[in-house]
Image (cartoon, rainbow, N blue to C red; front, side, top):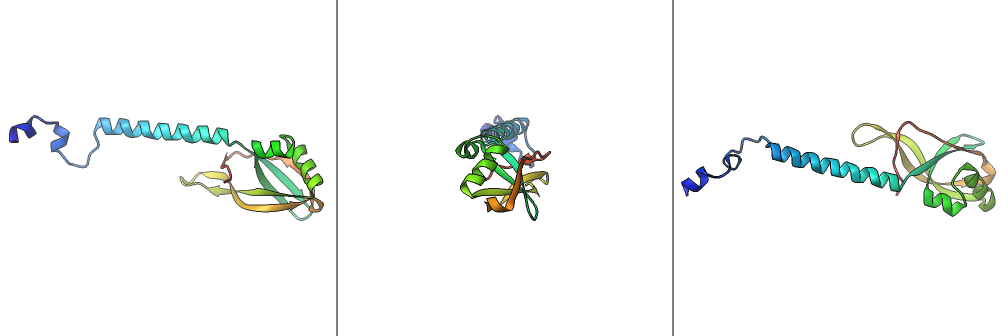
Length: 135
């Protein structure tokens, strides 16, 4: 039995807490795969941000491409038109927050209702931060 252990892998005999090259390569491959999936998912659920200017303040809201198509377009005028026609809309409000790694992100904070009579203008909104899709 001692002879079998002597001819086995050297890493099997050592347990010094160090990672082998193979383990590092496998870990890097898993990390890259996970990031590529996350990036593809973010592309699929691309969010469009709009600034709603009201009588009192400005609110940044996010709508997915599917939600915009449901409103009858894909730009700020479609949002404004739908708000005027329906009288109110339920949307996700977005604010800047720190992500899990400490980076700043534009993330959904609350589902809110917009009233047409309090909303003066709808504008497209751009941000330098990563946009987190709403649930």
